[in-house]
Amino acid sequence: MIRQSSSQRYDVIVVGAGNAALTAAISASQNGARVLVLEKAPEAERGGNSRFSGGLFRFAYEGIADLKPLRQGLPPREWERVEVGHYAPDRFFDDLMRVTQGQANRELSQLLTQQSYPTMLWMTELGVVWEWTELWSVRGDDQLRFNPGSILEARNKGVGLMEYLFAAAQRAGVDIAYQARMTGFLQDGTDQVTGVRVRTPQGTEDAQAGAVILASGGFEANAEMRARYLGPGWDQVKVRGTRFNTGETLRMALDIGAKPVGHWQGCHATPIDGNAPPVGDLRLTDRTNRLSYPYSIMVNSLGRRFVDEGEDLGGYTYARMGRAILAQPGALAYQIFDQKTVHPLEERYATGSPVVGNTIREIAHKLNIPTDTLVHTVEEFNAAVQRGHFDPAIKDAKGTLGLEPPKSNWALPIDTPPYVVYSATCGITFTFGGIQIDSQGRVIDTEDNPIPGLYATGEITGNFFFHNYPGGSGLLRGAVFGRIGGANAAAEALGK
Ligand SMILES: Cc1cc2nc3c(=O)[nH]c(=O)nc-3n(C[C@H](O)[C@H](O)[C@H](O)COP(=O)(O)OP(=O)(O)OC[C@H]3O[C@@H](n4cnc5c(N)ncnc54)[C@H](O)[C@@H]3O)c2cc1C
Image (tube, rainbow, N blue to C red; front, top):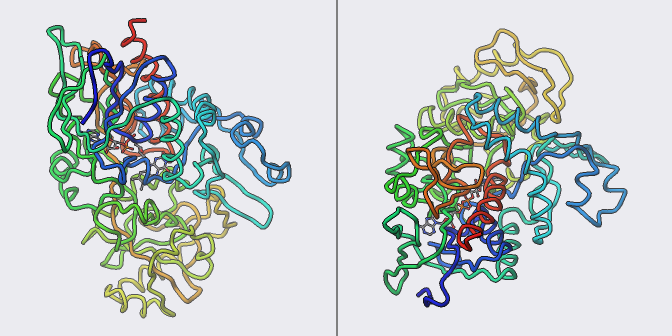
């Protein structure tokens, strides 16, 4: 039951309790609003996809000096061993445009990239503790080399991130109701959003507010909507995160006139362990990911390669690699490593059960793959590998020649047994289609006007990601527009 009297009316209601929601709630509270967060999940499962995440935030910085305020107290010795390069807002913007084939909304993308560093500083002030990410970084004996832009993740990943944010929300005086599912909007005669209808275990009630912020995720956990929007095969994919992001608030927003924008047939989907559970498990969080494929060759169950595993740095290909695997028979792929390439494997592979063999024939037999085809695939690949220096930290241009599909970087012959093979299938992370917001976080309607009293942030918003995605941008997008939308919702609700 949500306790509310007319004298204690909330100024701002935030729907959802992930990263986007809590940053919005805290921002609204910092701007003077009395805030209520409605979380559909029970308390034990709170935190949405954000809690399942790797906690990686992509952000712009000019150099190592910008990183120091984010990791205060690190000994000078530690700063000497890291190589971070620089990643100006323009470079982040260019990356975003490049991987989205120029379709990301330019104004919102400018804001996202320019506000990325100030938002990281703000989150640090809120108490989020950051650590070096292992994703796409290379650790030498006394050196840490990062892929620029992909430097920091929250300590203890998504679980840690959400612990820090729930603590910050509590300190900010934000109220949170669990098992509180939004089931509809309240609007007055002018279409002003005046609150939401909420279903709790005690029944249905109306919660009034001066402004509402939708931060309730995408529709990735809804098989019917996946089939309808993403297309054939997507209803059966595994879901990497929360079971609660079923898209009903997105539908409700469309029903009151919010403008659908972005890539409705597109989503973020990665290679995950072929034996991963059908929906995210908080004991595993993101550990089912299988992202070291750039150092492997990937074959399907017919024994054939089907993709350029080394087309770009992993952070720029992994989000569309799930789709490539889904298109294979049985939505299954095998990542084949030899003893030269098992060393750079991400530590998450330790949770898997690889098939190991001393010959490719043995591997084919164990995986029930046509033997002659797999042997031919490996021989043909090995013969096409060009000379060069293998360097996992950069695009090393050590590729293949005359092979279709090519492997553009990190091509080493598969010739040093025992061979180690991990199965992978497609796991959906989040959906790209959503509702239009403007630079103030206001929801825009189909006549291109703001819907009074309605804001949104995070996965529920569209127009940011198309076809692909630069790793670490999802959490950042939620926080940047959570902070902006929270402040503006508070101002609207308080009549400022
Ligand atoms: C395994 C995994 C790893 C990832 N790793 C990263 C990473 O390292 N870096 C990165 O940037 N991104 C990562 N992502 C993507 C990232 O998690 C999401 O983009 C981001 O968390 C979305 O935040 P959000 O707040 O919009 O949604 P969520 O965190 O999913 O929150 C949505 C909330 O809305 C609630 N909700 C839904 N419907 C209702 C309703 N009707 N009423 C009330 N509440 C409702 C849900 O219960 C949930 O609390 C990862 C995702 C997964 C699944």
